[in-house]
Length: 271
Ligand SMILES: Nc1ncnc2c1ncn2[C@@H]1O[C@H](COP(=O)(O)OP(=O)(O)OP(=O)(O)O)[C@@H](O)[C@H]1O
Image (tube, rainbow, N blue to C red; front, side):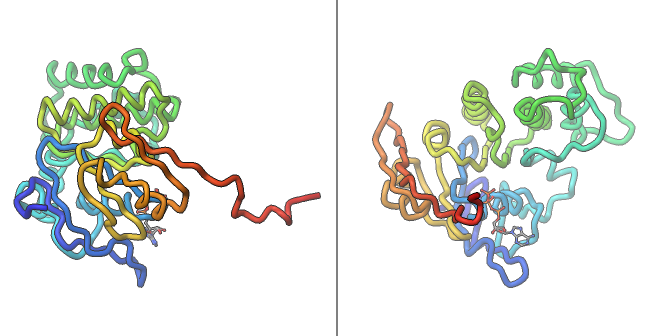
């Protein structure tokens, strides 16, 4: 990890009450890299993304391009960092186009009007995520996967050089999982956008991420390229399920082989 990395996470810790959520995390991400944050439920993935996005008070340093995220004004931070949270951040009655248009706000003043170029940018982003037929549909009536793609379109419109996404493919079918991850990968490669996202699917992470951060109970267990991090012994230990890793198309491919025994006690639910 370099202290000079575009995104530098240095000795970052987060506690809530007496619970340590993140423990002395250190890594760096370069411009145009795609980082996948992996780990079991409760490992601290969302908390880490919120810390990086400047949404949670923490100990230690989070620098983006040499400046602490806490030092940016709210509008300057929104120009630098676009965030796609897990679904639920649009609660009022608006169309898809209006939601995506919100991505323009960090670039506008109170009095500035939307230009033809702005409008085209919004429509292009909606097209990029395959929702051009839904422009005027009420956002809340879209399916979970369509809403997710709408939020990604909003982040595209925002045009920030750092893109943070919490489980961006969670609600997507297999076709759109690959479409969205390929789009994020292309943004990184072609426009130099730095992408940081949490994922649960290790094989998607292996295919689309340059680096992987593996968290467990708030600790950074491993960090680096997919091959050393997606290691069978390590994953078996972290996820408590036997696991095998083979190489497919030059990338690690992970298969878990769970035992059929359940740890949940169903005896009280019988007749
Ligand atoms: N406000 C809070 N108060 C108490 N505990 C919290 C709070 N926010 C998060 N936590 C705890 O911090 C831990 C990490 O939560 P986080 O949401 O970051 O995990 P995650 O890795 O994203 O999990 P998941 O895969 O289930 O989404 C969890 O044990 C969670 O219960």
